[in-house]
Length: 125
Image 1: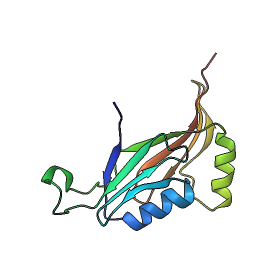
Image 2: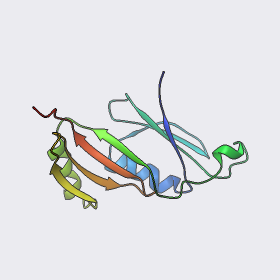
Image 3: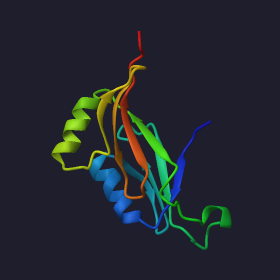
Image 4: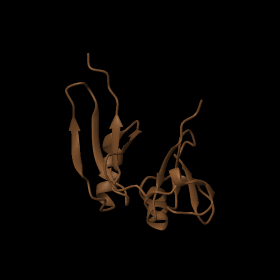
């Protein structure tokens, strides 16, 4: 089984630019109403769909409203990514921090209002 999170958005160009330029995602497939992107290692994907597209059933037509969703991106060197994004001028929504359970992470936000938690998991001893 494979999971692909999908977000219905009318901000396709801004979304594509954000994920390719800021997070180094690649484009797996794209047409006039659908965008499938993959992580740099090509192991995971996320998709974006234009709202109210006539090819889609009503269940997949309502746009995401910008709240109640987040994505987590696990990285090997969270400090390196944090410093690179700061240098690029990316707005950091939650500054880098260590959690009591062992994670080290920070968060940014995509053009759709989706929080992106960038984390290095470290089991607490």
